[in-house]
Image (cartoon, rainbow, N blue to C red; front, side, top):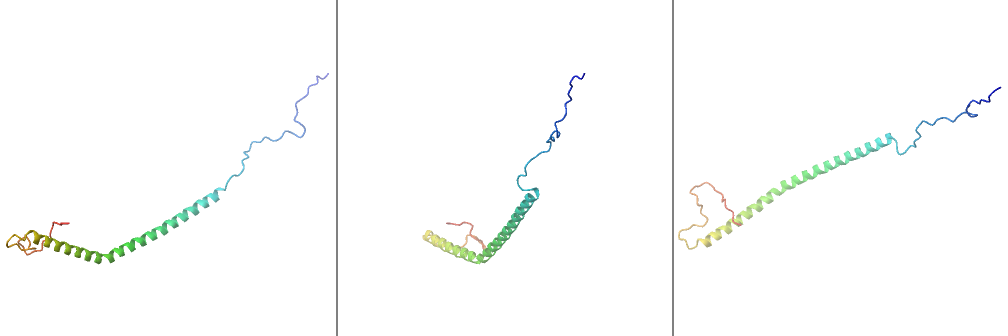
Length: 123
């Protein structure tokens, strides 16, 4: 007599397969696209830096030449200013020393024939 044992068997059609693979959706651009975008941005940045360097160099050249062209004007202005100051100093000296007999206005205090520029500037 059989005891009515029943062996466990798979269902008809078999078990479904075990899902062990990662099933992640593709999100965003691929690595090649990102690398290409970064390379493009870097190339554009280097191009802009180069253009900025060219412009900066041109401005420095222009500034140097403008200073070169202005040097004679500035020197002439300094000479005129020094002459006016000297004349004003002589007028003050003449006014201050008018009561001193034998005083020569503008005569150097140094007993030499060498030119000695005045070291005191009165503003």
